[in-house]
Image (cartoon, rainbow, N blue to C red; front, side, top):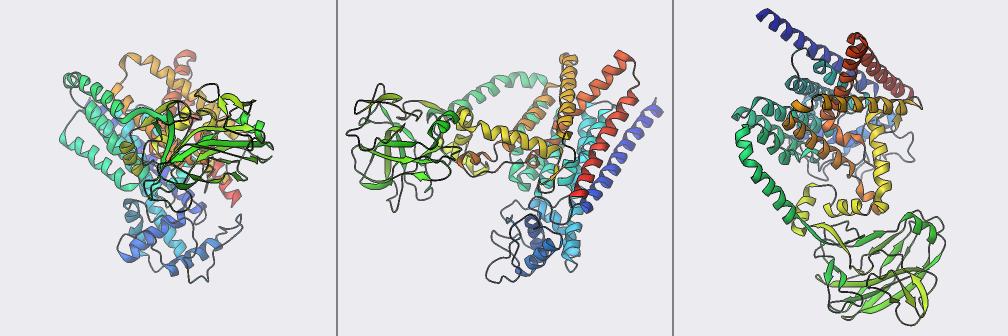
Length: 634
């Protein structure tokens, strides 16, 4: 019996060494095949590590070394970095930093201290050689991720189970993942630390609470906090595995406390006061929807307070596509009731169509006054946004501007006497000097409200989140205005996850490759669903909840990372920000294909070794195809 256990143990360990060998070989091929500086923000990431190695201190924002930048920029030119760009770095510049890409000196320090270790030994060598030496640090962290994947699979399955080699081997042969994990980028460190956090969390859930296991969860969560802001929320996720590690009897008594706590958070965090269909890109200094006794329409008005620290305080509404098509090339009239708590010179509501902006500067008093003006919408308008950003020129801090009854209609009506008269306070239909009008602004008088977050809480969240919480909620509630961003982002996450490399500009060969991968993914997900159904009575709910919450958090934050794009500054995030959740993501895929092979074995008596051979061959083919794509491109 002991010999059998020892044999299984040796067999299990040999699998790990084989996987690490495959990962090391594949990582080295990617590290030396991809030319220098041809990864996301690699020049800027290298610069931080170089400054740490040569100055023995953490660089501050704005720090740089001109001589190093000149050598780095020359290396970028040597490796054809600028071949698809219309400009290149000026190596003769002395008055300003030589351009090497976006500076990364505001990033968290932990990864760069590690990347600087080989640079201390090779500081007098060629800068390209230094780059490759630092890439070796990323390869070491990449191997740590494979070990974590093996450890997680070991916690979830018995000795000899196929998932013990499937999960780490899948990561070792996944080209998009391997490409980034062999770059100089703090995403590598973030993925490694979060993978260790997942392993520590599952370990304490499966083995039970103890102080050493608790220390593992806490230390790995703190490492995530100090490695990159994309995994800083590990601190908030850490209580989940600790809770599920407690004895069942103790957890039963704590359920009411947990439920009450969740309800209290919902009650104190959220409020139903935000103006519906209007988005707030920045955290406002005061509520943007209030009641007013002098409101010309209904009982509510829009309010924007001048804050010197937030000069771009505004509300934005995007018109639906049908309305944009209706307004292209048309002359429109835009108007509103406007006043302020003191006389002020402010901007009227503005219309921006991507080509030009239609607005006026108006003088307000403490009493509502109706202003109207007309303009022509561009024939090439792709989207139209209405902005309430009132402050023009110098204003006293605390100056408050109010809007009500905002109207947008087709035609030149600015010279008609008097303001329009609406049928209801919702101000959708009415007449203007006896001419019937249809208002294209939704919720033009702030009478309708939707979900928002308490300002103090949102201000705290915004310090650590890339996007204001109110903008996220607004984009989901106003789906007709933001659906294009989510659809485009999902497509980009899929393609950069499976088959785009470098800066996302090297695409895997074969037009049908992505469709074929989609079919394979769908089959894997179906298999995973079948596995969960078969095991439904004995599922490890604590582990599933922990992995599920972590995966949803990482992918959700990645999905909304570029949400400012709906405001006009287009940035579509890539899958690299979701790589910290790579292990639970690919665990679903691996479980699905394990279930399929098992089904074929018991249903059709097919030898499972054939299934594993096909699985490995498919992974290897995808990896070789990616390497061929990179080689051909460069």
